[in-house]
Length: 383
Picture 1 (tube, rainbow, N blue to C red):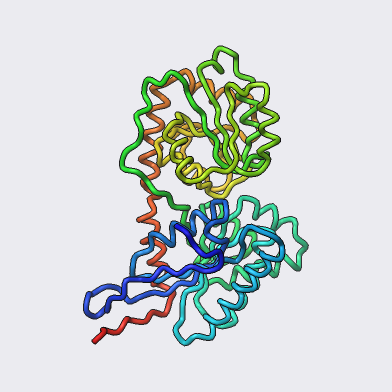
Picture 2: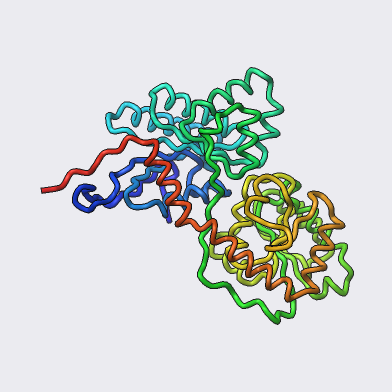
């Protein structure tokens, strides 16, 4: 879907609640990265935009876009103006703000405080694998400012039970404010047939670098015995340190392929072509790439960090390895190269587990939150 980098409006179906017996129309103003920005937050925003029930009218306003510093400042200034105009309107909307760490949090504090001052319904939606580390490294006064901002939310959405506990214990957000809502995913009805393939293809999708374990994965694959490497292939795709990972993998270019950021069609093709997904992250929220791989029926090798244990079980959908443990990661690679029945069974279980995170269920739950906290206005019947 093509979208303006600053604002996008999905019109709701205009239906009288009294006539059709449907819920009154709910208006939502969503703030976060532009929908075309690379990353998991934009993917979640787009899914919300696409799948909310039609009685929810949502407008997306970008707070950040890719480009020069001047362009980014201009985008945020337009977001502040759009929020100010909305807060002056007598027709109230739920304000849904996505935030992560560092600059994202500092920008969103401005917007959140504007909403709280106007006494309008506010949802703060927490993302970002590094938020806890970012928060703990701040001086006390700034920690207290952030905590007070989070405490002003009508609802704080956390991606997992682990993150819920962090916001309650360290930011002193009331448990009654926090809702755990893992990221959603589109789940296909059928998955590719992967039995009998001559070569096992491992796939990594995400930011290439240390945090998501890209270097660990390349090193573990290169350390496999040559006889096993001859039966396997590794594909990595994403942004970040593409050049560095390419150089690291250079001795095995015939077995390791490194790609820059790919579009959705290429991602889906790689998921269908691959046999195992690997994401040995050292810190995470709930990674969209892992959910997409599970939905595509791929068994996974990943780490028990962030919110991953809420959506993935060791020994069922695949295997957990310790973050940074190349030897354990290599052992997991060997297992899935050698054991096709286990590989296929874990992939089927991953697909079934992903159904719990289907975007249609997610959208209904989110719409229920909107309805619970928002003033709503019924659409008048047209003559």
